[in-house]
Length: 150
Image (cartoon, rainbow, N blue to C red; front, side):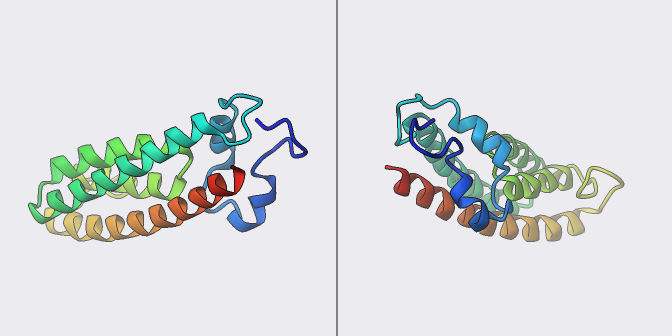
């Protein structure tokens, strides 16, 4: 963390976030791994920017799997990106990916009940669209955060 004035580097951004884009507890834990004298947050920035690339690749793979109607692949990719998103605190992408994971197993979006293949594919398409939109919001905010920290 910075040795400057704010003890919480996201404090100034809480109103902008409205705690909607990021799980601030998780993100602050990530920031706490940065060197105390590093005002640029290099360690966490590397992790976050690697996540950006990983998410873009995974979303592209999900698009291909959706086109191929490959539910097992969609479930696996949803599980993978859910975990990566949770590590950063990108909660709405995490939620969309959790839904994709369950739907890929022909379960309801919260893992309860069951759906048929056509309904699962339709809902996965919606969740994928939502997940990408939420990812874009998080990516824009996090670029803003790290660009203004440097």
